[in-house]
Image 1 (spheres, rainbow, N blue to C red):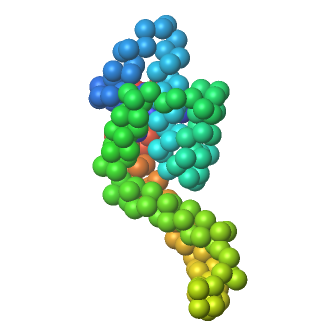
Image 2 (spheres, rainbow, N blue to C red; image 1 turned 135 degrees about the vertical axis):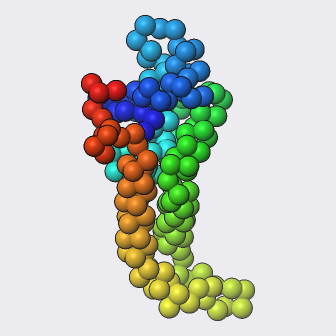
Image 3 (cartoon, one colour; image 1 turned 180 degrees about the horizontal axis):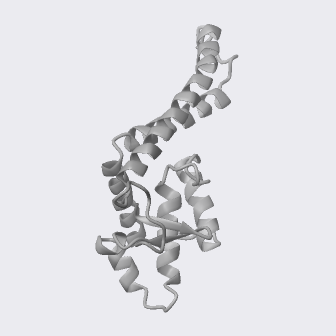
Length: 183
């Protein structure tokens, strides 16, 4: 676990402060309350973490960026600094190493968004220059029928990734998560 969520803000754990780029983000913020660093960490958490507690993970990437920027920086058109983009890449890399299914989950989320877009943009009356239907009704019905199964498999994949992330988190001797006073 790299960040701890308190009052809808991400705070770094001791382990995060030992690792780049999180260490640099924390040290470069010289304010006493570390407000900029906490905003950057919150951005990372909301952009990347697949946990159920993250209300932004199920959005498409471009939509997620705007919603997270609006939540964290109070401006959906906030220009994300390059150091934060690099930190996002590093955080995703950390999550991929903590969970073997993380990258597959991200790919599955993207595939589901593409399938939804395909079904929403579908014009069943569209024809080829010869006048035949571009898509067979049977194929469209099959794609629509497969959608609930895709959603269920995605839910199961997300649960597996959450389980893997929980198992990789730091634990005490009796195999439980330490609370904030034990660290």
